[in-house]
Amino acid sequence: MTLLWRDPWLKPLTDGDVGTENCAFCKKEFKEIEFVTACDFCDFGIMHDSCANKHTLQKHRKELESKISSHKDKPLHDYQ
Ligand SMILES: [Zn+2]
Ligand SMILES: [Zn+2]
View 1 (cartoon, rainbow, N blue to C red):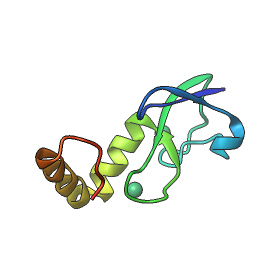
View 2: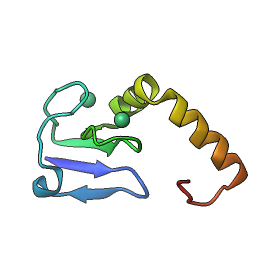
View 3: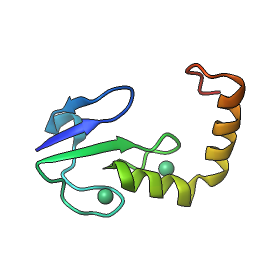
View 4: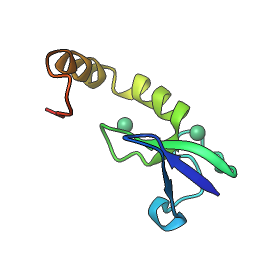
């Protein structure tokens, strides 16, 4: 199993880093190579990249929009 952390660059994770073999969102087992990421807004767990996008849109619409608007003013990494 190779899970690739998308942000800030692709980084292979060991099983110990991940602590799970299933996506926190869709509960499916990770396959041989998956793109995964974690939620920026809560400790939901490791998810498929596409699942994380869905989770964020479903659960964190307001946070997402405020983050997007804060990034308009500050293009560099700055979480607040
Ligand atoms: Zn998933
Ligand atoms: Zn979340």
